[in-house]
Image (cartoon, rainbow, N blue to C red):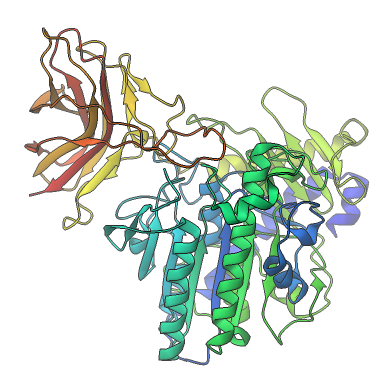
Length: 613
């Protein structure tokens, strides 16, 4: 077994083990996908509800010893269900969501980071939604998607029959927010997690009345910033002697707990609680330093504190109450575990799964697989680099950073990673680091160089490309500095300054074009207009249209942030007039730049909107 070999520091064993597991997994998945007949509907099938919170760390629940929080609903899921004390996800949002949905390492799925289109999941991936739909479940997503904002990457293209929420990394406001319902934007009233819960409950009531099984993915947006929360939850923390940011975050978590209790009560009142498997989990470590049981690292770290999250599995009358899983598990294990627990049939086009089922551990007191290995990678920028990364192998974690020596920790003896034992265990450290580099090379081999936005995947729906999925050029820049969701591009200080939108067209077509912008003031000698050009690889840039602009400042909309946000604020953008442009088949860049020789210094561009004629 690997655990014994680890003590002897055998590097060759780990690499050989990886090869064996890879071959076994491929064979196992080949056998699984041989069952291709679409199963007949079986209304006795259990419902499945996955609740995913955003930036809630391992220590952000009462049952894990947080001295400030009261989370009775979350705690009840743990106490009445199975707790997985060592449950690992990715270091940031989009990678975790891709792995959870597919059972595969996020880099295999095409997901690298959280913005610039690097959060898009390949359309060929088979998601949990597609798996459950194939098994005649009604599928619905309420909340944050973050794996592609438009077809064919959006939730409706990836197996969800219903979608109510938002597809970006975060939302500008959590009060009275406009949300996407299907393919339409609708205005909502109230606090966003409350609104999502209302819709989840309506869905539960409808499905239970119809006696049809459902898969509901409730992906809450909190406690991710902006830090907004109703006063009724915030007031309890006002007088606490803790940082102001923590007060807001803890209030947001207690609001989540309130809404989780609403969902479980709805299941109970509709007679569905005993027949519903609930999986509760976070998507990465905490968004800042606060109570986390001493774990090393926070969100965006590949140490324990950035990867380890609460995970409670609740299925009444199925498992011993208060049980703790004998072993550790990860987000890529959820897909194969659900297949095994519910005896689901996988679609014929399913891909090989990287995770392994923990159904046996949930159903019995079996011993965990001591040879279990899991790899974690974090992209720090849009440029893909192999490090930072880490490996959990048995009870050990090896951690690597660019241009630094790898570290090694024995988590059984040192769960908070205080004692780096790499120097004393060089053979083991070298073998784990080599295994990691080989893994990274394999899973990143097919990542695309560019993320082209399809314009005609769904011609009935206009395509809105936000500025954070475009590229500043020749002096322009992201106003917020990083190009997170909600950001815009400014700095049109010359005629050459531009913003470039990568697009893909299946055939030559005409599009109606407009964009959201702000133009606070214009020099009397300047021309308030922009030209639209198109550039395709191997050909020169061609002007395809132009638009005159009105002078108007996109005012910042006041929102009740408890502390200053790091993301871009919500603004009342002006939508331009329309013009028509012709675009050829293939990949290229739609380019917007000013007509004025000296540019338009007050011009800011938020979104490009295209509708196929």
